[in-house]
Image 1 (tube, one colour):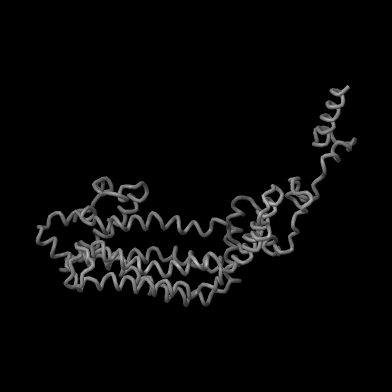
Image 2: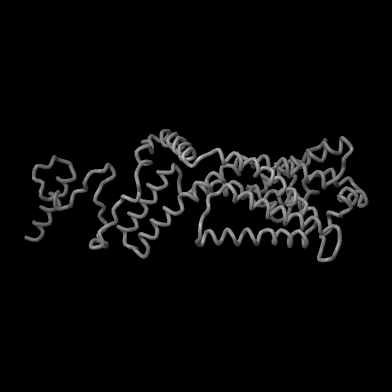
Length: 350
């Protein structure tokens, strides 16, 4: 049993050579190679079966990220109306005071739910190199499973036959049994998306809701088209992937039904407070109870004056003239320095 080392995957083409993606693809290639060796050892030499087992394993590895992403989606659906209300409140106001006030209200809203502006991006960022790495392992399997190089052309063709379908060929726009793969990929893609949306609160009407509806309609058709025009082994991978996603989603939906928004908020705040404690920051408990709707809108008469009425500790921010008028300032204080500037200016005028 000879496993391929990371330095030996340099012949991979396209995204298989991208930084980070290459390293992740090597890990998945290692898994694929192990699957092929084990199945070959029990007399099953078939790339289609290897792809099925490989897809199940990789989707299970991604399950924690999927659950985390759907928790945020459920939370985001609840937050969106409040976030949109804040944005609408300051629509068209570009002055510094309004921008600062809007940012403060948005941050207090995120604090209230124990999340952040980047919370939804992190799972997606983690998934991106993983998704990109899966493709070259499937499309360039010969590069990641060196044992295939020992097979003759006839043997190589034989192990790529799955249920009478040649996985090396694209089904094409001709009537054949091979079309079953892209058709099932489209059907399973549609069912997977419908199940994913079941545990999400209704987003109502709006640009985001319309975008989601459009994506739900286009993605299944896109899966069918790609499955028809690309080699069948890629269509098989997508097909099995959606089947696994459907099974996972059925369990996730049951789990999410038992998790209330209040419980999610509590969990988020607890996790956030642990992170803040490690940084020496105060907990969010007080901020989380702030009703952002009670935050006053900045005075339109002072739009061009970027002066917030409260400092970071909640105290009143003194007007600069108060420092000039303070004659009993302690040496070295801000007021004393302000008096020095005032005296210098008066002497310069004389």
